[in-house]
Image 1 (cartoon, rainbow, N blue to C red):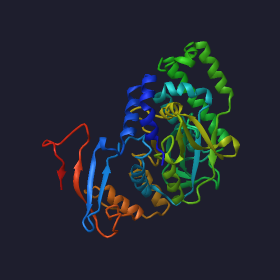
Image 2: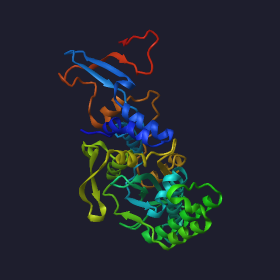
Image 3: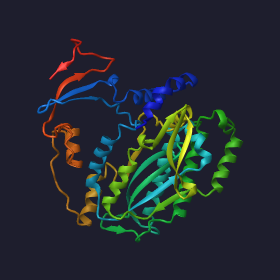
Length: 395
């Protein structure tokens, strides 16, 4: 299989010499290049039955790496399992107009924060309004910044409860079947909130303008842009509710820890060109192949490196961290959901135990004889460090 790491390893140095990159981009590239190689160290295991030897190298654990998201995803989904309720859940997507994409690229932390703030306040405010629902809902928001062709396309996926806790906390209020809040209402409130926060950021001199958007530093040009955006219909899309709560987790597993492109989508890499699979949503989501220069592929991939420490999965309303032990439990009681009261184990579950519990795959079983267990024989230290005695540690 061709990997993003292969493209970085072959053309990463050329790209670094051609462009002056921020430190964060350099770190991401380096992490992906070194992931699961001897540079990061690893360990040697031997089967206690047939003596088969297996060498495994450490992962970089960078959240932008296509190879390092599966375990994090499984841990996150496992933690969310206990939040599910026997209700319908909706999928709502908030997207900013294409006119704001370049501004978002230069002001990622600020614009993405505004996107979270405007979309979450829209859902909370409208759902509390008695004209729509009159209840406090719960939802999970996930930031994606890419389109299928790897270009910049910031949008928020929201998984929303189909109902909520009444404002006096006395009952559960369900929304209409197959309907949450009309998308036109969501769109216009979202547009107003986003542009209001954007204007405040501009007048407080928090925005950066350079290159092709340098003219927006002029108040007159910025006002022209804002007026244009107010006249435009913003895209808010509401999908039909999920078939069951279990389908929610299955869906989330495809979205939560996704990076701009998975290795499985890359089909060819030769003659300075990268070919990958994509879906053309303007052509009935028809699957197609796209071929671009390797350096252009790297450029597009780096569009989607998030600011350090930026949280791309957030919980709101009755699903927020501060409400899980109070309002969420209240909702479960009203919905007659059995709440299991277990004391938290002081022993943290290992990743091998988690994998076994969730997928029934015992990673410790020997892949050769299928009978013995792999046991640690040696630890391989990263190239940048070595143990005090400068030798491998033998188990």
